[in-house]
Each structure stands twice: as C-alpha cells, then as structure tokens.
Image 1 (tube, rainbow, N blue to C red):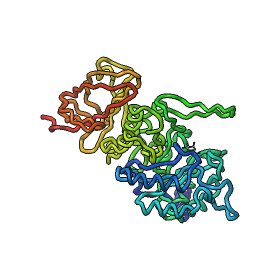
Image 2: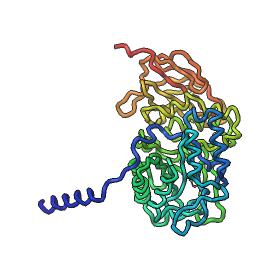
Image 3: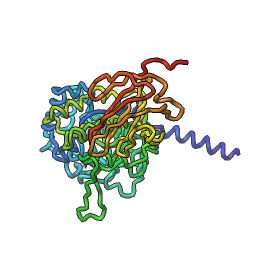
Image 4: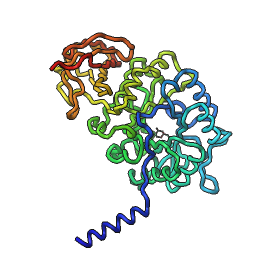
Length: 424
Ligand code: GLA
C-alpha cells in the first residue's frame, strides 16, 4: 500500500512538472462556419482566389450569415521546407506571403485557417507536419492563424490520438487560440478520443457532389479509395454512437459542403439541412464568386442555420432508432427518413428526408419522443409548426398530427414550438 501511494505521489509530482496542455477553450461553441478551398479549387489556390472569395462573401451577405473561417486547404506551400526547416508558402500562388493574407482576412472581419497533415506528407504530396509540430505551430501563430485543419495522409506508424495530441500541445504552447480540426476520416473512431484534442473531427473519407453515389478511385493503386455522396456519408457510421460525443466545442464533421457544386436544388437542400441537423460544421465548398441565386438563398437561410447553430448543441437522431416508424408515417415508406433535433426553448426540429426519386405524400402521427430521459417531443402538447425552409407558419399540430409532401431527393424541415403548457 505504502509503495503504491509513493508511486502515485511521484507520478503526480512528475505530471505537474511536465505541465498540462489542452485544446483552446471557448472556441467552436456552436459548429464552425466558413469557407474552405478544397472542394472547388483542389491545390490550385492563390491569394487572388482567396481575397476574391473574401470580398464576395461580404458583398453577398455570407459573412453576415455567420460564415467566419476562411480556410486554405492543401497546396499552399512549396514542395520542400527551407534550410531552417520552415514551411514556405508558394511565392507564385501567394506572392505577399501568409501574414499579409491573414491581415487582409482579419481586416475584413473573418478568421484565417490553414491546412497541413500529421504525417510526413500532405495528401497532395507537400511537406507534412510530422517531427516539426512545435516549429510549424509557432509559424502559424506568427502569421495569425486561427484554425488548423490537420490531415492523416502518409501517417506511417503514427498512432492517431498521440499524433493529434502532439499537435494540440504544440498549438497550445503558442498561446494563440487556434481551432483544431482533426481530419482523420473516421479511420480510428475519433469520436471516442478526439473531443479532448480537437474541436471537430471528420467522420468519413472525402465528400463527392452527388446524392447517393460512390466515386471510386481505383487508379491501379494498391489502396483503392472512394469519395462519397451525401447519403453514403450519412449512413457510414452509427449515428447513435457519434451523437453521444457531439457537444459545444466538439463536433462530428461530416465534411465540407458540396452545395452549389452540381447537385439538383432539392439534393443541395437535403445535404444542407441534414448537415445542419447533425450539428456538423458548415464549411462552404463552392466558388462563391460564381454562386447561383437559389444556391445563395439556401446557404443564407437563417432558419436552417439556426437549427445548426442551436445553443443546446445536440446532434439529431433518426426516429427509427427510438420508435417504430411504421406507426408514424402512413402509408409506411422505407424511403423516408425522419430525423429529430432537440432545440433550446422546448423547440424541436424534424427533418423528413426523401431518399427516393418520387414524391412522398403521407400523414404523420408524431408520438412522444424521448432522448435518454429528456422529452424531445410531447404528443400531448399543442405545437406551432413552421416550415423553416420556406419561412411559413403552418398552424397548429394537435396530438402530433401533420401531413407532409416531400419531392424526390429532397427534404422538409419543420420546427415545432410548444403552443401552450401541457394541461395537468
Ligand atoms: C484529404 C482530405 C481532404 C483534403 C485533401 C487535401 O483527402 O480529406 O478534405 O484536405 O486531403 O489533399
């Protein structure tokens, strides 16, 4: 016993000497919103593109809608570090360097994000962070970086939680609050370990702008990989497990948005609403300099964004996992998903996702729905129902009864607000 106690004291003493690092506090209290270069520009990025996007986001009202982080993804640096081991921004793409660009972004009221990788090389083959974590973190901080996306290519024998912890500690040592975005694709179940390390963690491989396809990359490579359509990402993991780990400051990241990148308006809507229901970060992935009117309207939709940014920070669940959907939807239809998200103030968002290509008309009998012990929807309450996509009040729902009509590959988003207190 005495030996054990002495051992414990020695351990406590040693850990106090080593110091304790943690991720930056107070960031990402709601899912981060912003723009990322990758989905449209791949490695073909430049200062001109980024400043053009920044200016356009202000002009179009996207900044006012809440999109704050401007993130430069892979391809910003030279293929080699300099003689001192520092990363070097590509002078052809960024002729004035990163500090200059960061100053521009900050002066316009945005925050500045950058990309690298925990392995030896980024996925685009540029120098990765492995073995240079503290040096790189100091460089990023000196530029004024506010957000670091950290990828997982060429990780070799690294262990994911240890590798990301090293970078978290390196960021903490700079003293600058930097949002840490873990991009490990869900390979080693980051929802189980990432919440103390980063503010968001990818749960899937790369997104692809289609509703339900898989974009295979065989390329004769030994390791085949795929990019994934919207519903493929939705179905990739056990949502019940993932949602237990989502909270203020720590989010499941379903990948950057493909809204405006080639899907139909209904598919874009389904994608945007589902990412909002899942409390995923909302990072625009389109070329906002050429955005279509209806795409812009969707991306600026205040009521959908409010569902994403709700202060309770609870991720939606699928109704099937709580109750038998056949009792809810008449006529029963396997192509219809019902997702429920508890909101602050006793409100509740319900999304009806039609996975089929044909319209679904149904009557819905919402039962009382609980999440653990909390009542999320009380069927004995009268609710005011609002169509959050079209900004229309639909009247009262009594005993949970409503009727719906959902076009193919599209979604409805209703917000239920208690009309009166339950009678005793
Ligand atoms: C990986 C990531 C993408 C993007 C690219 C850059 O594939 O998952 O989001 O950052 O690398 O090379």
